[in-house]
Length: 327
Ligand SMILES: NC(=O)c1ccc[n+]([C@@H]2O[C@H](COP(=O)([O-])OP(=O)(O)OC[C@H]3O[C@@H](n4cnc5c(N)ncnc54)[C@H](OP(=O)(O)O)[C@@H]3O)[C@@H](O)[C@H]2O)c1
Image (cartoon, rainbow, N blue to C red):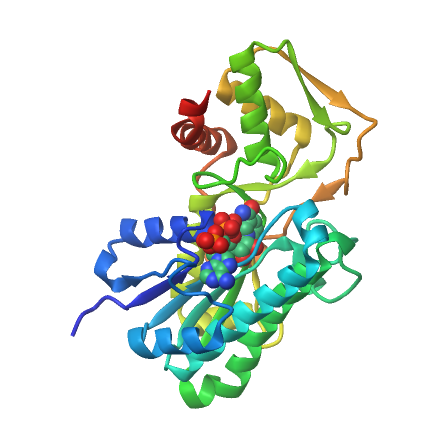
């Protein structure tokens, strides 16, 4: 009998799924014990296909890092796709996992589950205490349903079937595998692209949106992957000691936030852009601060390892490998 569990990483081509596979391999898991399927091979919104896949592969553990994700524009334009596809993927994977004897599953969500006006830093118990941000409410509700699916299966089948499904909610992530699309990317990849292009074209200045004063938290994706594997592997008694049956999700952040201007300066340093950084106070700033309280995870023995400057260098190398030839 092999000592290595058979692990299915759903969404292994995404930024987070890729990092989880990297992390498992770095920790010594055998590549042949990691099961993956591309979206084209297995559409996770298709219940029959998901059931057939689980019946065939019978994994021991599941990391659920597949999701339909996007920025404000995509969330606003395709709200039906966001809520429907994410609900379906989660319901199909979690139920098929249960029906095929999977005892350990980790569901990945995001900080958008918290109310728009949640006290900062946001603690896990802020969940369901207020109105969500309107732009991504459908996505957030689907994610909350994912947490509640895990909790409900634990409550109903934990004793009888040994089901132990956990959830982690990361802050903003960046790193290799990110999306650098000009209109549809998150803050850090968008800044990397803009500063790189400004350097190449020798532009004298780069203007960032808003006043530059809002504070945000950023975590390197490999730290997120390490946290995911850490939470998955925590002894059950320890996990239960730090969570509650109906408040079980765990925040994953670095515990520190920086201003948007500071991030822009850090990206400019990384890219070696020496022009001016200007702000545009006429553009909206968004919420003044968004920081997660990660003390639950810290108490469970995990801390991030990669600082912003080191992480940005790795992210920029990734960007260059993908896009340098297009310049
Ligand atoms: N990136 C961040 O900053 C961030 C921050 C916090 C939380 N998260 C969370 O982390 C998770 C993963 O995010 P990510 O950034 O890695 O996203 P991503 O790069 O877009 O990856 C998502 C993956 O899911 C796959 N997928 C989507 N729909 C599918 C379907 N119907 N069937 C099968 N596969 C499907 C995608 O495949 P295709 O591309 O082929 O469709 C892709 O490989 C999400 O839950 C997200 O909320 C991400």
